[in-house]
Length: 184
Image (cartoon, rainbow, N blue to C red; front, top):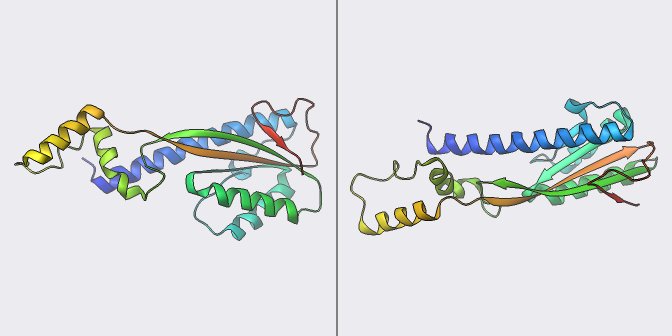
């Protein structure tokens, strides 16, 4: 049986993998519609905890090399994503088209708090909550445990944003379906 921390890390990893996979699928579809060769492993950048200037430098190089780059972030990293995209556009000497796609991703981790504070929710989801309690629970503990079992786990909708930056490409007349074109 996994420890609480290992279980939490596993959930975080699985949610990140699902988000990355969705982002890569969006990139593949968009690259095909824009008529460029898709380089999924290189041209999809998930914005995380690294400093913004590092993302700006690497994404600028990728944009020059591949002509189409997808930047993606969720939750607290949305502000950094927008800042990175704007800095890349301002640093570029050529015209860049920007496509935006907003969505939500289900998560067991409450985006308003640190991940450790969602430990109870993860325990309830996996049915580990009763196993972590002592052998002789107090009356208040058993009542709160029963209430959690009745209510079940919470699933949070975490906001996600994907931005495609396309350099020197012909934009289809109808744009990219499901994406909004942001004019500079």
